[in-house]
Picture: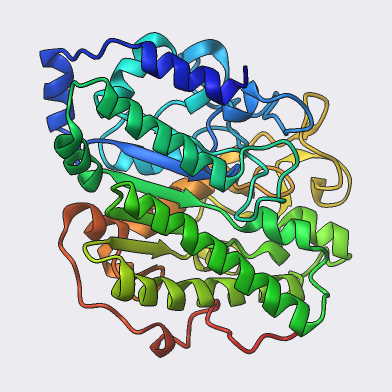
Length: 394
């Protein structure tokens, strides 16, 4: 039996119950539940239950996490909390909901009662089915959520109407795309190859989002693609230790711009009632890299904290790696992932209502959660943004 099937069977076998304390705690949260999909920026341990070659977050990943993380695993590809954890904390939870494949009978009760949600993300996965060897594809993650919803209804605790109402009020968080670009190559493909690949990525992404909408999602938080050419591993691979790789960043910007255009069009055409925010991880990390004076703590924005070789990024982070001592001063944890400190700054920017014209659109994450919607801002009017670059340099 597969691990995913085993988790679904565990859910089906659970007897749903809730305590008065649990209901009181739920009332203090800004959303009933959080459902997380995507890659290693938000995975909290699903890959721990997958066989090789799926990557795992081994020591010293999680070195700064509280020791009370359930099961003794950290599962996070960073030194502490990741983006899913910090976003969940901003809306009233202790951290991200548990990894779907890690669910115990008690945790299954919370999931079926829609008290917490679940994290389906898988490090190394992407938008496309052939991205991420041995990982849980985005398509499979959405299918896991479909199974979760079906089991919630079958348990006959909430009923179909109440399940849909709770889901419509919950936050659906997705972080993906970076691994698709890593699978694509070194960023030096022809313009036609890159254009077709990016169009396929966005088209496939929208299909998965529409399926989540069909299943009841109405409040969607999307994280766009990082400035992949600035990742320490990318710099060392392309021989650009002193500068970001422009061609690789161009791919990310083109994807980010097309995603915004197509998401706005799809919402208007086929997803009435959907509210969403796209957070510019590209813009936020670009700011941290090029303007370190904006945050006196994050002074090292080129080298990785954990690794080896040039920029400490030629080797994977492992128990034998060179490990920095000032982890709060680094933007990057390893070759491709940010530190907890960088993620905390990123989430603060996502929720800042004043940053709606710079790092989030059409509303900030804060406005998305509170329902205080601002007037939409046209994508093509924001030409000062680094990711709006439909005519890229390749």
